[in-house]
Length: 114
Image (cartoon, rainbow, N blue to C red; front, side, top):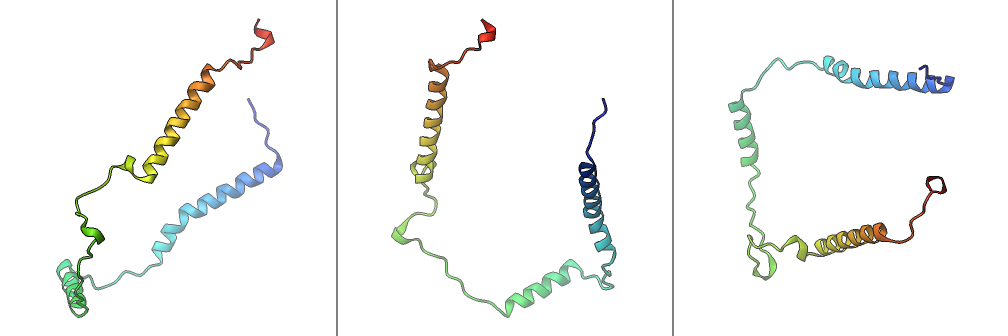
């Protein structure tokens, strides 16, 4: 079976093919132009430089206290939050709609199937 394509569809397909080829070829071309650094740092050297940089900017950070003395491990159930209640209402409403729409008496019969 031969499929007919109009000239503009072939042009769009060719343009998309060229664009896809350029997209996939661009990262290796960009990576090829990047010069490699002649000096390689070891993990220990990099860690020592980072520790030295953060030691100069040390700031004491106090842990944040939650208002009302709430316990950190305590959490509400999802279905007790406003989002959970909305999810339950939507699920029940959708289920009811499915049941009612399937059992309704407004069934259209095709005259050709009698």
